[in-house]
Length: 224
Image 1: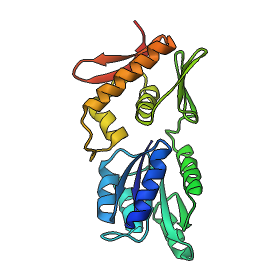
Image 2: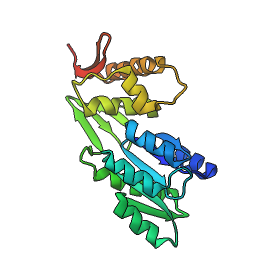
Image 3: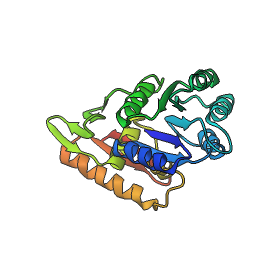
C-alpha cells in the first residue's frame, strides 16, 4: 500500500513516515499543499494523510481540488484538537476521516487500516492465487505446509502480483508504487527482488512462478 503524507512540520513528517514504513507501507511526503495536490493528482496512491495547516495550499483546499480532479482515494485530515470547525469543513470538502493532534501512532495506523478497508479495491488480509497464500498481517508467503517471510519491498511487489494475477506489471510500475517516483534507488533493485521472489517460490515448491514478458514486465502464472 502506498501512502501520501503531507505535513509541514519536519519532525512530525519524518516520524510518521518512519512509522508507516516500519509497518510496510510505501510513503511519499510533501511539506506544502501545492506539492501535495500535484502528487495526489499525478501519483498512484492508496490513501493520503493531510495536515490542514500547510503553506502554499491548506489541506482543505488540497482535498477539495483533488476531488474535483477525480481523485477518489480515502483521505484523512490532521486537525488541531480544539478546531471542531476544521473537522466539519474537512469532511464537507471530501475527506473521509480526521485525526486530532497530538495523536498516537497506533491510532493513526488503526484509522488508516479502517480507511483502506472501506476502499472498493480492498483486499483481505490473506491473498490467494493457485497454491499461494500471502498473509498481510504476518508478512509471509506460503504454499501447502511451507512458509517463508518476505521483506518489506518484496512483500509489496508480491502483493501487486497477487492482486492482479496474469497482468503484466512493468519494472517502472513496481518502482513507482513500491519505492516512489522520486526515489534515488536504481531500477535494478526490481530485478534483484524479482530474483529473490522466484527463489522463494522454488523453496516453497509452488506450482506458481513469476513469468517474464520480454520488454514489458512480469506476471504471476502457473508454472509451465
